[in-house]
Image 1 (cartoon, one colour):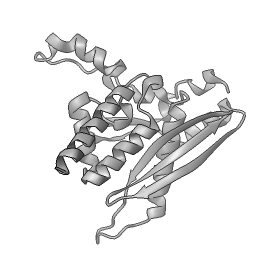
Image 2: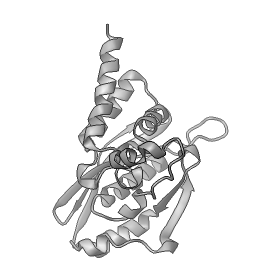
Image 3: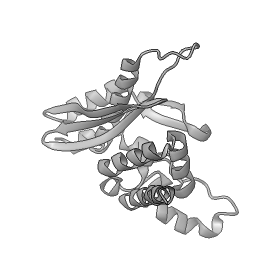
Length: 211
């Protein structure tokens, strides 16, 4: 495995943008570029779907990337495409998109396109200036998540998604809570400690609902 090749930034013409939540513009590279980088940087790699689930408005897969003996797992998701009459267009295509998302996230744990997951630090407002230093320290580089070595684990992600299903918490509500509490746009950007905090929150809500 050649880490220098895997971690090499993508060329500007390979980086695309798409609309995200709250008016954000998200940067990404296409799946074929990630596959080409894995082919270049690894002697052998394989990608498998460990499990998948279909929900009301999205599909989620858990993928496993094995590259030169190193194993990385990550969740990927995709919205279910509905036509003008409310019918599902192609669940297979939605699952393929979720698998591609999972592959790219697994590859990012090896350094592929990792620069795309780190946004520049937000400019503090006048109200935030007093606590800017503490806020930056808590959010990590760019406020977009923990160091990859300390990032939330796949087991934590699975437990959080399971808790959300039990409590009927939607994906948008989950990401809204993560954004409001930790100022991070995605659940996958949380640290292990922050992931435990989210799970503890849902466990507390579940116990309260049972009494």
